[in-house]
Image (cartoon, rainbow, N blue to C red; front, side):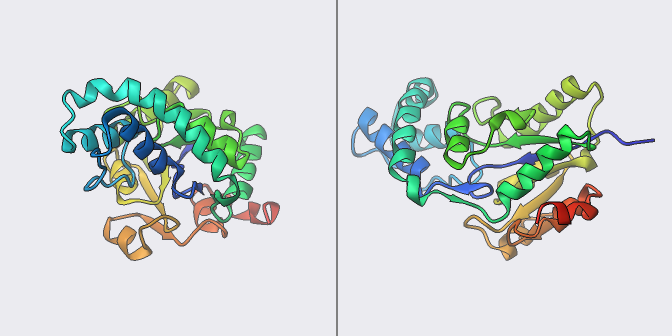
Length: 244
């Protein structure tokens, strides 16, 4: 019997692309415009964090009252500033090695009836995702199962949301061992393991292979320039020649 399709959940920042700091710079500019120059993100680790949490935690540390209530206004102002920052940094935005070829190949497989579903799991505000995907020329519509940072309170909750959406789309619950979370931070690893899913880590962000191994990742690679380690999880090793 053919198993249910595998679900691949790609992170964005540090995994698919680097925006040359556009996201955090937009957050800083927005927060300072709203709350003054004393607002600080010091002590808040954004790696793998959800955008609403990153802002709310920084706001709390900066003495902003009712920080969670400020998230919608911050989000709207931030998205406008992010679009500007991405435009300013257009020539410095980097696509991580192998990402475009791999995404193209996986999408072609979906179209051809391959036994996998292309998805995305990211801490970004929903409105930030199309801006970042447009910056690297990736069609967001190719990702049929998504879970974004303002759709659940924690990153593990995003995994649960993605699995529910998979069930709604496919008509059968995914097998956790065939849900692969692809990310570059320990938080990506931990959210995958919270639901028994596979943590596939890439050392293309600020964390090293050693860091990701220590976090408990099931698989760790330097980057996805060689897609075989990931494709082997999908039993697609023989497709390697098709994407090189």
